[in-house]
Every structure is written in C-alpha cells, then in structure tokens.
Amino acid sequence: MLEQAQLIEKLGLEIVELRARLGMNSRNSSKPPSSDGYVKPAPKSRRVRSGKKPGKQPGDPGHHLAQRLDPDAVSLHVPVSCGRCGRDLDGAAVSGVSTRQVFDLPAVRLTCTEHRAEHRRCACGAETTAAFPKEATAPAAYGPSLRAYVAYLVTRQHIPVARVAELLRDSFGAEVSTGAIVAMVKEGAAGLAGFLEEVRCLMRDQPVVHADETGLRVDAHLRWVHAVSTGDLTYFELNARRGFAAMEDIGVFGHLSGVLVHDGWGAYRIYDNVTHALCNAHHLRELDAAAETATQDWAADMATLLSDTWHQVLDAKAAGRSALSPKDLARLRADYAQIIAAGHRANPPLKATKSPGRTAKSKAHNLVLRLDTHAEAVLRFAGDFAVPFDNNLCERDIRMVKIAQKISGGFRSHQGAEAFLAFRSYLSTAAKQGVNRLSALQQLFDGNPWMPAPARAGP
Image (cartoon, rainbow, N blue to C red; front, side):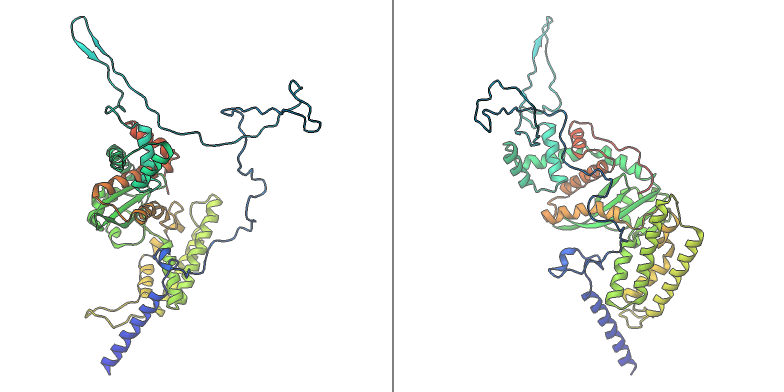
C-alpha cells in the first residue's frame, strides 16, 4: 500500500508538471513568441489606462513635415498662357508666388579622390616624399565613410554580409566584395579595445547595474554572451562558460558596490559585495503561469500586489518622492507575507522524488520558496526608487544579439562574434548618450573612437 501511495503521488506530480508545460506560452514564460505558432495567447496588459483618447493630445504641437526657410535648390515654374483666355503671359506682372517643397534623396555614387605625394629633391641631393593621409592605406582603398556605413549595416541593422554587398552595388555602384566587408568590421572592432576598457571602468562606479546572459551559436558550438548595462552604458562579452568563472573574466561584478539587478540566477548571488534586486517581469510571467496552469490563487494575488505596487511607485516618483512611506512599506510587507503564507499552504512538500532524502517540489512550490527567501530583493524597487521594477533595460540590450542570430543563424568564428559584440557595446552606449551612431562610427574609422562620458546614476 505504501508503494502504491508513493506511485500515485509521483504520477500526480508528473501530471501537474505536464499540464503546466502544456499551458506555457510567450506571455507566461520565457518562451519566445515564435514558439506560440498560429494560436497566440490572448493579450493581457497590467497598464492602468490614462483615460486619454488615442492620437495627438490637445496642446501637443505634433510632428509633421514642415517647409524649410533655406532650401538646397529652388526651381521656378512660370505659367505660359492665361488659364481663362489663353493670352501669352510673357512679360506679365508677377502677382504672387506659391511654394511647395519636395524632400528627396540626392543621387548617390562613390567619389574617388586621388592623392598625389610629390617627391622633391633637396640641393643636398636627398629626395623627400610627402606623406599620404592616413585613409590612403593602399594604391586603391575604401575611405572611412564607406567603412563606417558598412559597419553600421552589419552590426546595427543586422544585414547579412552578402546582402550588404548587394546594397552597396545597387545603391552606389560600388563592387565591394564580401571579404572586404568582413575585413572592415574586423578593422573597426580592433579599434574599440580602449573604448571597451573605459566602459568596464565606468561601470564599476555605478550605483545600479543590470546583468543578463544568453546563449549564442558560434562556430557550431553554444557560447554565452554576458551583458552588463546601465542607462548610459552597455558592455557585452563572449565566453565559453555561463557561470561564475565567466563573470569573473568580465572584471566588473567583483568591483561593484551598489545594486545588481538580475533574473535571480544563482551565479549572481555569489557576489556579496552588491545589494541584489530581482526582475519582477520574470516573476509576473511565472505567477501568471502558476495561476493559469496550476490553479494557484495566491499567484494571481501576488501578481496583482506587485503590479499595483509598481503603479504606486510610478505615482510617487511623479510626485517627486524617492521611496514609499514607512506606512506604505509596512502594509506592503504584511500583504506580501500573507500571500506567501497562502502559497506555502497551497504547495506542501511532495515526497516523490528520484533522489533519496530529497523532497520533490513543483514549479509553483519553487516559485513561492524563492519569493519568500528573497523577499527584500523582490521588493527593493519600493524602498529605493533608484532601483527599477524589472531587468528590462538589460534584456532590451541583449535582445539585439538574439535578433542577429535569428537572421544569420549564428557566427562562423569566435573572432567574428567578438567583433560584433564590440560594435554592439559601442553603438548601444553611443545611442544611450545621445550620440548619432553613424557619427560615432565615422570617428572610429577616422582613427579617433568616440569615448563615453562619465555615466549618470541610475538606470
């Protein structure tokens, strides 16, 4: 009878887990939207409606294509004959002028500048040759503007190399080989070593830092991209490992002294030099899954509490406050503890397990244990408004890496992947600090890479 009871309990646990797996989708788990197929989950938003009508709001100046006071060219159109009687209007008085402006792309083509270095012989008999400018690296070479544009297309717009060659041929009549394009990207990445070191140094002084990691196919192997972000800085590094040893290679985490925002992965918790804050976007997805697939009422209550608290924080921020009041925080913690207690009651430990001496736990049970054990890290955003509610900042930064992999299928070489990540660090940081990406790339290929300003505090 005891064996039968244990078997029933084990099968019950498996049924719960299988039902939960069947109910997973992109809205209540970390599965990508592409995995949903043609049947998409119903949209669900926790946003509080503003009450405003869609579209331009009253008093907003709006945005439209406006005429310029200084057009690049003027084309005058003269009426030839009267529209009523047909009389010739040559020499007739001008009674007024109407204007319309057309904004269009200019005709584009490659320009070729020939540099001639004179050789001059001194009276002493020695011959001296003038120096070529630094962009004239060979008898025939591509200039920094074209190389910057190529790097922009490959590393920012994620256009495959062969299609970049096609675009250059169709747009500019430039027959640039795919090998030359790859060489341009490698050349630019080689000039970013100083920039990357500066970002690492600046990151160490930040009070709030975000971290995340994702897998990447490189040379037909799984490698890991580690991302460290703030509102002004982005740094990516490629490593064969995912865990603590790889994080130590980055040289940032061990030097931090503020808040580290992450998804709760255990390797981040090894660092005791930081204050941890957990991503509540992850929690909301897991809570939705528990409520929908495992009928966990406490999970729906916790999702509501976290969402309502976040909106409360947003309102308090708008009012110029830096934290919720002690009274509000005390009420929040009491409600939180009450929901956690309900979660424990709904998820008693299960005895069925493959490992002797260990107790099996469902996903919902693991979730309530995590929310209980790390309650302070979960609610950090309410006690310190410098701490965000989620880790979306870093997830948005790292998403571009996944887009590149989705388009190209991965990277053929470790060197190519590292070059791409160096450019992603450079372009993301430049954009965060209000610098035009193409201008930053132009500086890089001019031999004078743009360097980030000391970053401001917070995300």
